[in-house]
Length: 165
Image (cartoon, rainbow, N blue to C red):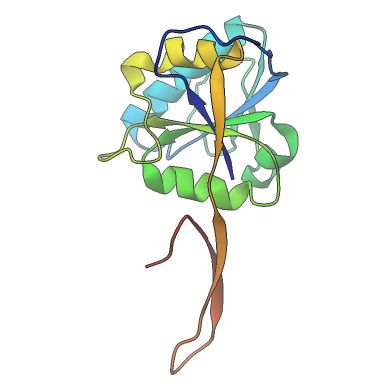
């Protein structure tokens, strides 16, 4: 699963390639006021840059007028970049949603730990602008399909990122 990470250093890459991110999906538990507020701030910033911004249908209203509310399943089909706002659980949810695509995702941490979603809300606009300008390194994660076979009951399959415990 591709993940866009901004460069920690201030050095300029020798060859800057501007990605074609024209449609950006925002994904997160928007019923949490901290998450919703962060998503609105981010959406307004992206809309001012002339980008198309998608959110889930459940996103609270009122929201910025040009924001497009779509089914969650449409986010992966219509976006060039997915930005998650939440914690690592939100990143894992997005990874499952984006499984089988080459769409990069970037995580804004509104959770507790931030192992996967490592950008803080106070740095998000500056870091997002760097990503939009092509100043990032694209990383990847392993996506595993795990089959759970209980002694009683029905077996089930799940997608996980990096490992399964």
